[in-house]
Length: 182
Length: 389
Image (cartoon, rainbow over the protein chains, first blue to last red):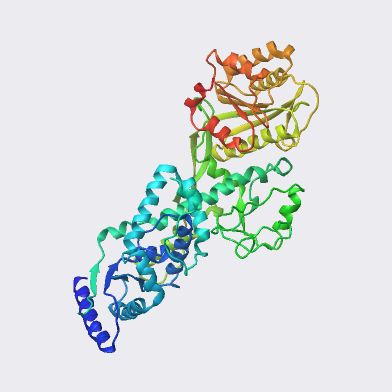
């Protein structure tokens, strides 16, 4: 296991030199080797730490069954940021993981040079994952405080709005007047 | 400077994550809730069937999706709009209340919609809710002839009737012998093996349950429906849980009759209410057919609470006599609609009797959602019933 990681690191270093030679301009990437079930959760939840919601459960079981039947395998999950985060599965073979590493470096180059990503990174700060984890923690606190049903109702409503977010607007908007009073 | 990629090994606690499973359970819980809320509607009185075996019901259930916005394709709705319409930021879009017939609108809403339905076995459902419930205060009253006898297959022997020939074992014996003897032999009588039946005895708990229903004129369809659904679930729960329970069905107006199970769930009546008639009939049945030293007796009485005042003394006396013979007497008052404050005739009788430390419990059913609470109240644990009055 340990040996494998050192060799992964060796390969990653080699790729870096290669990427430099090709003229890629990218954020550093933190790779993490995780067990398979955790990887499934990251893929389903979209973030390594995220709020609990029943709909993720549905997707989770779907993914789990597909995986169990051999129809779906997760190789790579990558989160943009500075540094970027990428996850590798420890049960995948070393050659598969090497391929993923090279692939992710490409992603990172795109993230750094894409206008949309750049914009959002400026607005949200570069530590997106930490921020998401903090939000998830707040929701967890709210769940304990107000009970599952009340929090779930609000989350359901919020998720309904998810697909209607206008990406051309600023991320942080002024609150509506009724919420401003306080 | 060259950006540096680093590789970490995952910490071992990642294995402990099970958010997915937790949310999956929550999803199931939500579906259970939906089904639980729908069951009483689906099993309406006309639908009550005495045979749940293999019976299944279809529960239309939209797959649990995220709530989402949709285009307004429904001409019934008024023209309220958003986006490029006349609205402004901050407007609340609440659909106006409809005055026209609500059923009509519902029908048009579901038009062309794909519905996902779960075929659900009624027995499974009853299994579910009865998992944690049991008859209150059940005692083992055996001693004499209540040993249930049954035969089990056990062991084998070289002799037996041909019908019990155990072919597999016989061939095994033959093969064993052939290996030892190491020459060509054929099947002989010594190889034959027969399964044996053993006689076993099992101590059982005998119980008899009386379902008594008031079918007088004051019991409207709604009230009868509540009571019948209640009985339906008790009946099938008990059947599932206890193999040797006898159940008798009695309905009364000023007179009382015993019915078969099927008739009981269809019975309607008219006339006044004299509860004592039913109690006396139960008393007769118990005295003639069920020895209280041998049987656990239960009675569940459903009524709207009205009873002739002339009948009061008689009813009180017979209830008292009954409670001495029964383990438990449950009184279910069906009062659809708003809970009334005034005490009904029957509940005051029960209250009076219960002061003398008899096992009586009562529960008021106002609406169908109460049925679950009611069942739990009577069957979850024995200690709560003392707190009722």
